[in-house]
Image (cartoon, rainbow, N blue to C red):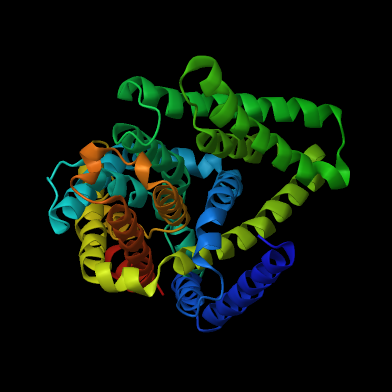
Length: 419
């Protein structure tokens, strides 16, 4: 790709995306739907060639998730989070798996596939991760129960890497990634990621305690976070044959640093630089991811899959999420029932589903031969990639619009918020 053209495309993405996001802010609405629509317009007018959109997502997606998971967990307050830790764990394990399963069954039913076909469960794994960061601006203007707010926010931070883990396992089962024993694979990815994240956080603390980086603390933090991600995703599998989730490691590293170093006076200035840098960078990443996701959805894809994709989206939002949450939170000690209903109805999808669907789409479209015949006999590779992309697009945009719209009135009714 021509360097001058590439820089020109970035100017469109950043300047145009920023104007769109500012417009959303002015009208007091979430920016995600407008960024997706802006991407659709880029696709419709072929402003950025489709091939460039598809090939750029692998790098942008992985790099972006590292940034977003780190800063999301960095800003989690452990003292508040531990009060609802039991609920968070149940949501991030039981609810996540139930949402994945039901969303997958709905997908398979809509596209006339065997109900237990792994294709549907891949879609379920992609859309099971939530993004309540969409609701943070709304929560800030409400008399919101802090335990409910932190539950939704913390659930998102930690179901993002777990959703990625489940998606990788589904890809393995489809033959699109290295296939190992599912139990060992999950343990290696999730538990290994947690352990590596704690090691990364402690290592970072030791280094920063001995060296005053000053203005260079932010690039050092980013570099070290990426280095541990690379070890997890690139080096460790070559040595052992198993993967560690680098995304989980990034999240745990952020949680450790944000709760052990940021509160200490001796690290205050440097940690403020880290927070500011990652916060600003995450804004760039969100714009890129959502605009490029919209740009990856062509009008022909929408025409072919709009109706079935909408059904899949509504099945995941209005069926899978409520059932998953209510099952998970019914395990004692249970939160108040109306509070559980509110949590069940507030799980908008965002960055991780957008990134995972675009990466899967690009991989299959660029290498259709990697889809094994046992899968392609049910759905040709191009149809498989397109159906997953559009269904995820629909799930994101519908969930954000619906759940941002009813967040405040539902809180008033279910949580007895005083507005």
